[in-house]
Length: 373
Image 1: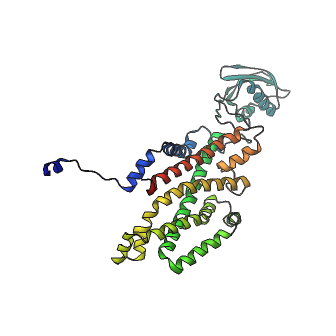
Image 2: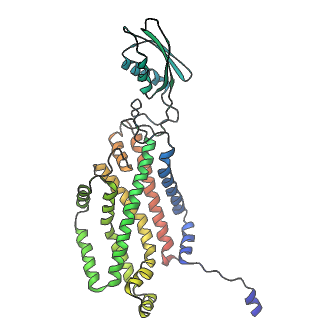
């Protein structure tokens, strides 16, 4: 018996968090959503550095261009772009033709043509590297060449000619940052306040929770408008303030969990050993609240993103030239009949991100629920 016990392999236990991670990995929807969120986060953070266009660059010749995998300008757009540039020179086109990636145009005028007129072609979004190939002795006729500047707009352009791909990625960076920023502020305030109220109990708990009830009774949108007026158009300060209002639900959740934890044997043992309330709160109560807090955090972030989209839709959130998914959706909704891509791309990113956050929240809830183990 002794030999068998000595040779038997040791049984390695698994911690609460290890068990929760194993259960979360078994949830395919939650894991796929987690990977998708990581991808969206990476693309939003690093994507604007790799796309060929800045989110603020305006291409006057490419206003409301539909999405395309091929380069602009299209063959039928070269002539109109050339005519627009030549009109600004105040000369007439005698003839033009295209050879590969270069355009050759002969112009004539009743006055001598100034060589500096080539800047009008260079200023165009369709042409570059303009040169004067030849000029008549009297200077009334000149032949110019220019290379066709190819531009790719995979998501199309908006009403002012800005690349929608770069603006969608920058909008994702802003929307996710706002969601995380306001969510972290709400979680920190709610956890500290709710844990202090629940663990203290008695009259302190009653007073603290009545303050929460009073704040609940006030109109939330009134708070938001007041904060916008008070903090101005600085969206970081504004959503820090919004996060400071959204902590009410977290405070109630944490307070209920703290009331249950304070009756546990390990808390009573810590009290018997002389550990102060602050030490018990920081070492025992708050660490054991991490499960519900993490779950609520995944549900709070989409709530903040939707709030930001709503405020931006009303014109109270992120302002131009900065953008967010809410701002893009607001613009796209006004052009859905004539330029539906302005709505489809940002709406897809917003909706898919919200779905992924909710799936991750459901997966964490199932993984951390002790009744399902």
